[in-house]
Image (cartoon, rainbow, N blue to C red; front, side, top):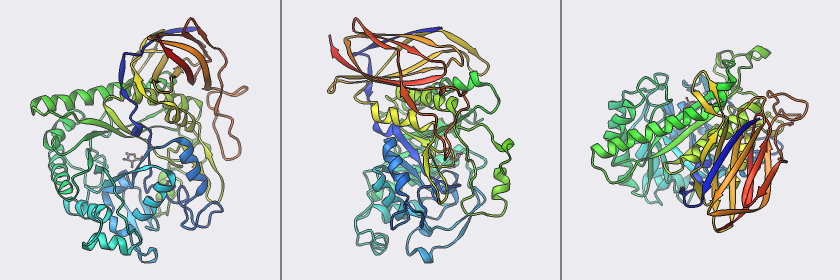
Length: 511
Ligand code: AHR
């Protein structure tokens, strides 16, 4: 039995829970848009072709903001192709994914979808093949009320009111040699600076995200952020981070410790941003937008599926690339990544799980068929719908285990929030032990636990193993009641099964 002790003090807070931490991402890639959120003719589709079943699951997730339209896709995208009468929109080759883009779905359809999904729009501009002019024209089209060529064009296209998009990404992964229009930090820094300046001339009330590194392992990591922020510091509000973790090499112990990597990545970017702040004698702080994060599934090519290369060889429309069934282990890791993001909510103000549907999806769909919740859906929904009030800074003493990639790591991982108005403490706790249960003492300071409101856990279902997953026909993995939570003398004791992520809501009073 592993042991851990978590101390939470009502005075040790990091600030309010940033609601934009619970973002997701919709890219014109694979089956995320086409046959994901949009499928005209599907029995669940509305008159516009938006799938109501996917909308309902998106609202259930509690997603707050959705990044669109890419991703690598945006770096070759002409936004004008996606507006106006659908039958006049061009079919184009999408070089990023070697697929055929019909443009049947574009900006207006996404805005309509976002309204129905009750999410904020985070729009990316193309700084790969385009630049300042296309970005300011898109902004005029989207946000200017009317009386100009582009704002009137939007109105002609059926949107009388401006879209009022506040949050914009200045390109995507521009540090990556795979990116269409890949740039050096100097080239990108100057372009992002000038694009931001020109966009603010059109609309002064924007929040702008500069591209940081595509992962912590990029050879230019650190230097990239430093150069880009040196150019853009006065013009932008956020620097981006992207990270995907996978269980592909069979090292489950390291995979389960992925949040250690995320912690280090975040802390290194904060340090770099603050160094630029000091050097430039700036007043404001640059915050972080972790606008692509997730786990990717274990390869299932061995199961006889065609490879992604085979699926995209002939410029297919929305091929099912990158699809798979997430398992229990992957859901537990997603829970710990959410913990990492919440623990850094003083500086990470935006985070977008990538992607919402099908490819790397929280949700899966079948073309013409059902939509269902992947295993990773559950920790996301639980935290998005439960975290409230102030983020508490936990002090943790946990048994440790050794990992090849990240050294010794805590078996128990935690984040917590305290909602003073409601008198509710929320705990999000993972046991990374593959076979060992964990006993966790939660010591509260300045607070007394009066009552357990709810306690649920995602773990290995009875009779299954850690590879259990949800499919179109069977969904054995989800949140179930967690027995073994007790309050004692105002504190809490948790008995956690092996390999799990739990969410516990407690009624608390101040002492
Ligand atoms: O989310 C899939 C892809 O991963 C995105 O298009 C890209 O930005 C990242 O490399």
